[in-house]
Image (cartoon, rainbow, N blue to C red; front, side):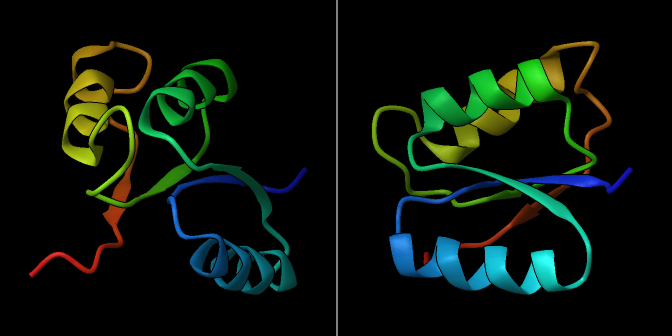
Length: 86
């Protein structure tokens, strides 16, 4: 069974590019374009890795990260920040 990676990103083009490349390497990829739905997906699906944008609608990536770190099921989930923020 393939490892699952969750991408939480609000830019559709970035999601498509990253998702395509990860799927070509054999990963199962889930996506969310809002912070709150991404957090829900992470808690339900328990991915192996999260790729997270910081600037998201409704709930920022930093808030998502903090919520995941406070939950015992996701506190050690590896997170890669993918952002245009300087």
